[in-house]
Amino acid sequence: MVDAGRHVANGGTPTRNDRSARTGLAGRLTGLRERSVVELRDRGRRVRAVGGLAVQAGLAAALSWLVAHELLHVSQPVFAPISAVSTLAASVGQRLRRTVELIVGVTVGVLIGDLLLLVIGTGWWQLALIVVLAVLVALFLVGSAAVMIQAGATAVLIATLSPSVRDLEIPRFVDALIGGAVALLVTAVLLPLNPLRVLNRAARPALDLLSAQLDAAAGALRERDVDGARGALTRLRENADEVNALVEATRGAREASTLAPINWHHRHGPVSRYARMAEPIDRAMRNSGTLIRRSVTLIEDGEPVPEPMPRAVADLAETVRLLKRQFAAGDEPLRAREVALRAVCAAGDAYRAGVGFSGAVVVAQVRTTVSDLLVGTGLTQEAANRLVRGAFGELRPPAATRGR
Image 1 (cartoon, rainbow, N blue to C red):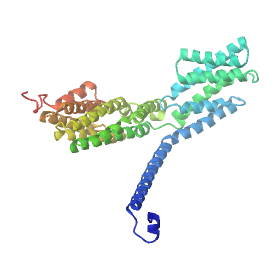
Image 2 (cartoon, helix red, strand yellow; image 1 turned 90 degrees about the horizontal axis):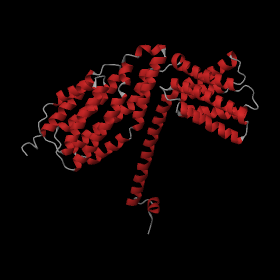
Image 3 (cartoon, helix red, strand yellow; image 1 turned 180 degrees about the horizontal axis):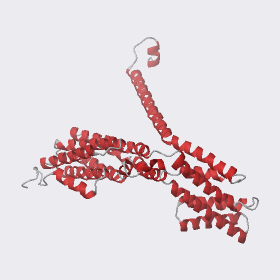
Image 4 (cartoon, rainbow, N blue to C red; image 1 turned 135 degrees about the vertical axis):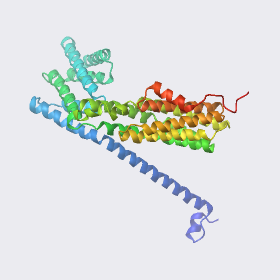
């Protein structure tokens, strides 16, 4: 029997197995190429996102070394640039806090190290005891991981280097102070972040994810596609990183608009509105997850899907897209509010047309998610709830259950 390879080599027609192997190989190569493109795009986006931070860190390290060495005549100001980079490596929005923690941790480490060295001397067990006590005191005073790390590291330096390096304590403290101060100077004055850019960069993935999965859920409801609904639910559940990045970015935007004089004009404008959006968007994510999960159950149980129900979910997705565009432009999100209330109107029509148990939950989640998004646009919770109730309309029993 002639195998497929010899058959083709001899000029014969490829067998079915040969064609299948080629097709499978082509599919794997295509998938690999697509994954590579996505991975390269993600890595490029990551580099662009932290490029400014890298420049800030380099500038802060150089300036802190110059200040310590040239102005204060510290012979080997190693810890000043380390402290500067450590401060800048903190999450954006926590740099002022990180500077304070840095100084507190160094102070605790110096005090504990010096006091115990005077009493118990040096050695391996003395080092262990000094580090344990420094960390425990830092934990008692502040309870921050950054403070404990700084206290422990400083205690190690004091316990191991003090016998051979004189007057280590003051340079260590001064270096920490210089590094933190220079990092804040770079952040606030020399290379300040644009708070709107910080927020746009962080909000885009979260809002794109939410709108895309709501669109997918609307299509799944329209086509009664349970696999499509399950896929949307799975992808939405992977939103933790996106939402955390948005919450962190709001802190960074507030810090940038507070510390940097060039950004002070942002404090009570678009940045303030944008920064208030993080928590409502987080709630909208969770409520949308419930909406999509009940959509899966609705389709599996064969419940009715009135025509306005997919339309309501699609309008919800459009609301999220409008929020992204209007916040990025710094505009008042009036159009987003209008489309959000249109989603509630459609949900009310679906409810009155007749829905099952899971359908009623989907309708309720549309209302709740719209309320969250309206709060995200700057309305109070009371105003948002009032608008939602007015747009939903009459709360009479659905037609399918009336008279039972």
